[in-house]
Length: 426
RNA sequence: CGGGAUGUAGCGCAGCCUGGUAGCGCACCUGUUUUGGGUACAGGGGGUCGGAGGUUCGAAUCCUCUCGUCCCGACCA
Picture 1 (cartoon, rainbow, N blue to C red):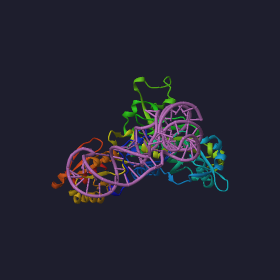
Picture 2 (cartoon, chains in turn red, green):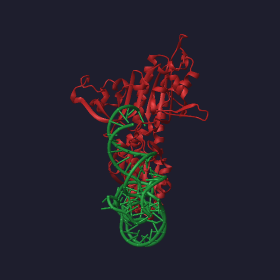
Picture 3 (cartoon, chains in turn green, purple):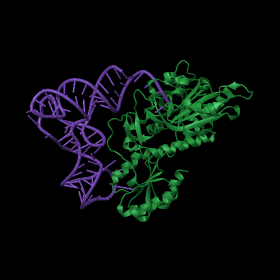
Picture 4 (cartoon, rainbow, N blue to C red):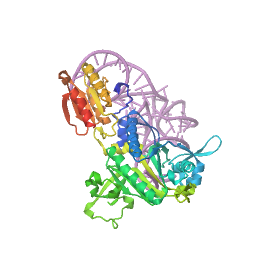
């Protein structure tokens, strides 16, 4: 992509309304535009990251047999009346009527809708288990939206719903999802800590939250420092849930089973939450399936969320410096930024740009006639992991690669530079 | 919803107290200049000051109402 034709409204000024660093950087890097309180448009740079996150989530879930669907954002109120949550959910749920005066809601979550689908088609234990998911927009009319996309009213969420014949099966599915979450966050280049959580209004008796560590996180976490010493083979629900890890509201120093010196406390941002809640909805909404003995049962359900737009903010909170964003290479909007410092070198720069594209590397090419200072600072601000800088050394066919995270610079030939980028992303 | 701020050009701000029809920086346009960290100079376009009402010869400035946005709290992915 040539910067000259890319919508990237970067700004030097800190927006007055944005307080936390991720919100500021998202606005300054031209990622989002606020249309009204808690409601944002996602501009091209942000959209590219969303696509990466979408793809990683889809890969991770399809791998364990989940099936992607898309449910409506707008739902009939009748389903909520059936489940009994119409009154319970409160003012957070946006309610309105269509032209026939039929009550509708803009879905804050989709347990009711997915149960409505499942009860229509899943009639036998032979069709179980099933895990359906979507990556879609939700709306919760927060009392006070804040922190940019971290706590918006409209947000993109991956929500999955599982149906099992038995409780034992459902707990197995839960564990599968738990492990898939670890896999997914790893594919995103993130370290997360799974906490034992309070199931809250969704109900049920088994629930975990997944937090990204960041100093500006909204909750204080208490956990066993063993989390920092885990080997890849330890990254399973079975192993992890043996370690102490809870949010502050669940933390009880007297019940805490580990010695004080091993107890770590850091702030975290919740990016995922999973629940097992049994037949709460299948019962209230009368979903009946026949089990292997021919008896009617209410299937056992779980639901599993990942806040996709929230992840944008969480990633930036945990990965930035004074210059701007530093994208983990797994989710970067472009793999490499190409800066041409002099008009004279345009032919060579174009050539390198096309080489990169030929090697299927995504590149944001600054082909503008801005001053060098602005080119450097824009590239640092938007945080692509690698920058290739074309300066006077191009006369000897040499370019410079800068690694955004460390600031290290390497001089090499154009051919080697392409190879370097390829290897970096292998 | 309680408490606190704020609304002047795309963004960040000054002007308001002590009424006299708007200014700065960045961004934008034109030209020259510069070329390894937001280069410099010159010229230029853009706002009737969130909205409504009032006081006054005259309101961005004073008064009333209203809307938006942000921060703290309760609440949350």
